[in-house]
Image 1: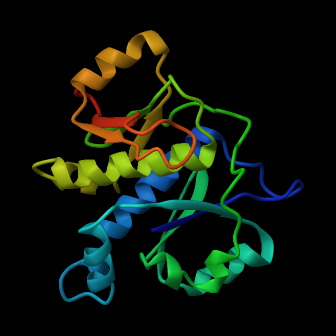
Image 2 (image 1 turned 90 degrees about the vertical axis):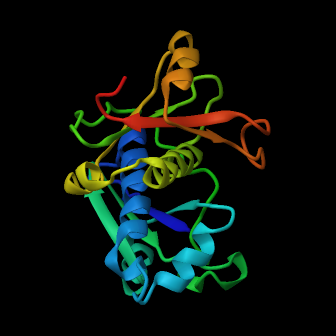
Length: 211
């Protein structure tokens, strides 16, 4: 799944914060999964189901100006809440549309951490590891993985769906991390291709209000 963050130039609307980008990416990924077009009989179902049944790789890119505008024509869902992120219908890496493949992946890092979104009852909270520094692109992908797994594992999505799949992302202190991991519902263990060692727990998730 390709996720594209709108990262405006100086003079346009202010750049989003790190946490806002992570929250919007996680929400966008789940909204695409739950979209009626992704369900059986929908035009996206075959592609989404094939990807969802295998390794759930997500690639976070950034765009601005005409390159951002060009992505509008591709099938996607968009979340605009603190940051603007589009999640695109998954495709094999060798079939990523050129308009997306030309967008930059590496170096997506926002300097302002920001503050978490307000807690929304019925939503999901994601916490990112404090043990390894993550770029915004990496953190957004890991947060989206955690939300994706929560979408699969929660026994009833009714309350979360009613919130528009609200996601709050936290940056806990190192001393809080072991207890946070133990009490979470979902844990993401990274394959170790970029930024962190293999097997690192990069993100965890739980229904907001449960911890």
